Length: 186
Image (cartoon, rainbow, N blue to C red; front, side, top):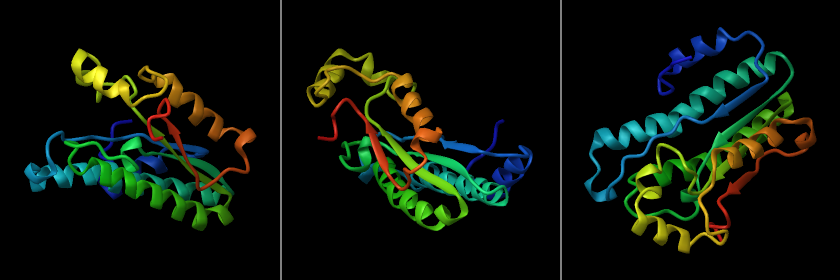
């Protein structure tokens, strides 16, 4: 369902259309590469709008629906950049760091409503966002020097953890951030 996650009413309307809602994976994210010093106000606003405001909007609307039905699970997507910012990612790293605090706050406030909230922090996963680095031999070699497993992650690496966190087997886990980064955050 296409929706502008930075638009609170559009998100609320979209989520109301689902009826029963048991699970939300907040996976919308963008980056504007380049030095923070050179980022335009529009670049900064759009990244904050999608990454942080979008995460808030989707989680808030989902939590309202989940509270009415006595529970659910929310997974927020963070990044290894939240704890180890890379140069030239603009405001991206700061938005992902804010998601850590947001996840903890949501877990504290929404746990009594039966809602579990956790975050997944991917490292270099082969996605559209990382294609230019993965396909550049010099950049790949430099990145993989910092990854103990010496490989890029796959989407399935992230999806498998998210699936576990949504399962009953993870029923006593909330407010946590899990790195899926091949050891890069170390």
